[in-house]
Image 1 (cartoon, protein in one colour):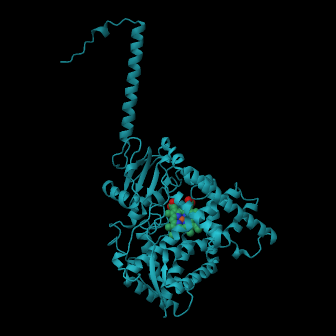
Image 2 (tube, rainbow, N blue to C red):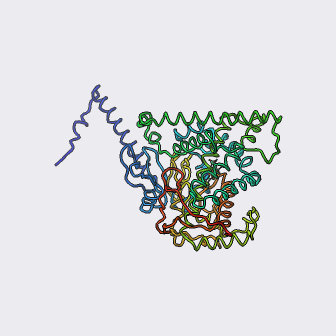
Length: 516
Ligand code: HEM
């Protein structure tokens, strides 16, 4: 049996060795106490449930190509609506219920208004000189207010009504001509042309220049969607050099910069020719507005050429793919459900009453149309995991301790399909929104395709003005069917991978003009 003999300690006489021993014991005791107290503090923390993680990579091995669907939904079913993962050593809070989303985006919105860093995106977006990646602070506040008040205000959105109508009219002509159409392609070109005309003053879709611009934009969107392991495990940052990704990012950033320099120069020249502004307030494009702000010496922050170019890139990155994705999924769902198309067509055709063009005032009365778009955004939020946030302070959420520096992912896809909120959540049923006040404007946390709070999407009205008008015109002017031989139940519903989740396979359909 073990026994501890204290007698030598009692007959203790000081010597160098014994002093060293005492110091050593004191040091050990101090270390032990520190360990005990720190573990006590750690165990006192009430952390959200987490799946087991691996050394160095954390939970990264559990992320698949469709994290919103397979993994985060499956894991959050098991671990709950607030779940803590680790990407490398970065703590990542995954939010999968409307209640928890409200806590993050409303109750504690200020604490979660920062964005995590992303080296690839930062290189593409002028080192956080844009709005969407800018760290929370004075620069972001000023840039955001330019976005909200000057570029994307209701008044400005309304001022581009003619642009939308002209582009939609061209789309209708193309459909009439071909009948058998690739809707995915047509929607992508339309949203691109609308944004080009509103932001840059003209289209960049034709000829060599058009091809180059489309290619650049597609490359940039692809790069923004890449999950960069080096951001979470810095020791693996070298992989991007090896695979050529770093070089590609440099090239695309440089080429886009040259393109935007030319656009800005062209605008400066035109402004000088017209001697300041000209053309009337309502016809100014975004670059005109931004150049005026640059000239205004009273602007109280550093707003230069890079800020202008970064903001324009944000508008393209945030506004093109997202907008056309909604149209693509709306038509996909409608083609699978003739009953829903009939109701929509009856509403739209009754209100249009034989007029060739649907107006803004007509749209206000189209309740089923709005319900179809809400239902599409619920089932197919274009950016299912929204744009990540970052906590700036320690905070308690639903009784759990969340530390400063935690990345936050809100799974709008899972929230939109929560059976506690919705009846038959996986079914496309626009009717659910007919007698409901639930909207996507950031007040109802069960439907948050545009996020919410301080960093919620400032382009919601801009996007939906295009989407409503396109969809109303499509069903007013044509009857729709799937290509010969393709049954509704066989329509491929596979999603693509990346940030914006559109269809993997283009949507093909056959249009018959109405009245025929
Ligand atoms: C259906 C179309 C769109 C969807 C689904 C969408 C979705 C989103 C989401 C989820 C966010 C992050 C919100 C958050 O963190 O709470 C966001 C931010 C943003 N969106 Fe959109 N968006 C769309 C259209 C647009 C358009 C048309 C524009 C501009 C013309 C735009 C510009 C921006 C900008 C600048 C931000 C960053 C805001 C900030 O960080 O302060 N978006 N969008």
